[in-house]
Structure formats: C-alpha cells, structure tokens
Length: 273
Image (cartoon, rainbow, N blue to C red; front, side, top):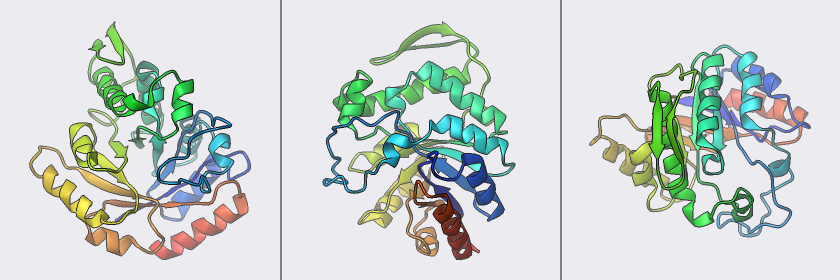
C-alpha cells in the first residue's frame, strides 16, 4: 500500500518545498495539490456539500498547482508529485500538455496527473464553457494531450478543441505519458476510468468496496492495469482499503496552518510506520 498526502497549498501554510521535503523524510510516497484558478464570490454549492460549510478561504487562496509542484520537485528526489485534481476542462490542452510534460521532465518522471471535471458552475462560466459539457471536455482534453505527448507532429480535431500539425516538447519521461488519475463518482465513473484513465481517484463513500471491485474486475478485460487511489482516506484505514484492492491512500492536511500541518504529517507518519 502506497501512502500519500494532500493539502490546499497557500501562502499561510507550509511552503510547498518544505512540505515536500517533510513528506519524503517521513516516508510518504506522494504529495498532491488541488486546483482552483479562482473562486467566484457567489457560487452554487455542490451536491457533495449542500451547505457550503466545507468550502473555506483556502479554495480562493490555493497556489497554482504546477508552480507549487515544481517547487516540491526541486526539493525532493523520490516523492511522486500529483495534481489532486487538475481542472483540465477549463484549461487549454496545448499549454497544459507542455506544462505536464515539463513538470514530468524536471521531476525525473515523478508526476501523477490527477484530473476531474469539477463542480463550480460559476468558475466554469468565467472560463467560458457550459457546466453540461464538463465531462466531454475533460475526456477530450486528455485525449488531445495524449496525442501531443505521443507524436512529434500532432493533430486533433474534436468537439471542444482543435489543432493541426503542431510540435511540442519536451515529451514526458514516462512512456507514453504520466499516469492519468480520474476523480469522480456516480454511475458512469467506472466506464469513464476505463475509457481514458489509468487510475480511479476515488473518495470515501458508501459502497466504495463494491465499486472498487467492479472496476478491478472490468479492468481484467482490458490490456491495461487499472488502479485505485483513495483520496481523503481516514487516518489508520490503509489495511481496510488495501484488502479492498486500493493501491494508494492519500490523507488530507489542514490548510492555512503551517505548524498544524507539521504536527499532522508527523502523526500520520506514525500511523503508516
């Protein structure tokens, strides 16, 4: 079982480089940073948090994830570094393909590309796209980036994105690309993971063991090994989830408090020792 950490990195928390060194020193395998380009002052609360009580100021204060992960990469040698998650639907796939490949290259092939469609309707509207297209935009963005990574001259013409005969380097260190971890839930998540991802970035929910088993059984029919990362695992639960077939447990740290984050890392390290 692999063990990782995640936090909203902010200027009032641990510096990403310091947190990454601490995570590596304490024996963690990975560190993930989430993304929000901004937070609208007024927004629709998501179904998973209908009162908005879990959405604090750190959502607007979070650092740009690839910048923070580059700092973490420069400070470490073994730690895998991931987006948890990157909102690819609201990004340009040409620029994001270069950003991902560049981070994978400077880190020596340690990048984990966690992605998801997102939930903030108003944030999406500010990026000029419709909430209803978030799933198809996410899948097409990943497919377009895979084309760029795999080819010296890449062409893609789709519903949302289009480019013809472009060149872009560097190519990712890991062939054919860094692992794509798809976040999400719902009835269609297994099919979506099988369609264009390498792992399911799952979150704790009722019946998760059954869904993990469903995905792993379905993956046996493909030529690829599909894995499951549990994002936001309860501390001390790795044995349970390892038995259920989960590949990696990732634990949340409290944002915006450097001293508390140090204590939490040390406490979690004791749990996995």
